[in-house]
Image (cartoon, rainbow, N blue to C red; front, side, top):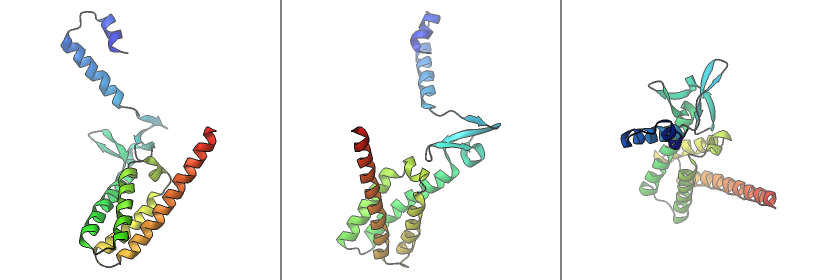
Length: 175
């Protein structure tokens, strides 16, 4: 139902009432993924995995879903912490220029992709969590930054290869 429909039903609507209706209509638009009932249990949408989870696996506040699962949220928090730790490593550790560039490239990629469902759905986040362990060790001086850069380089190569293959497939489909 639109505002125009409501004006036809209630022709004497005041400006305040119209504003309230517009606000209500806009609120409804934000709820893109309403909860689903599966086998008598409510399932809510997780923006990280781009799928529905049972209510007991979701982050819920005051009886409402926050829009993400507990697993998705914990992974996102780790990836975000990694980004911040890498920033610290860049400033506190003595790195070569090439190591700095590699870490910065990874940080840029991480920032751009940590909210994309492909990382979560594919299970690719597990590789990123392996890097998480190395980042912590480098930060505590228990591992050399070179090992971290080697891991990051491997992931970036894999990501670039996947992106190229995806582009090739899309180009072939377009033809």
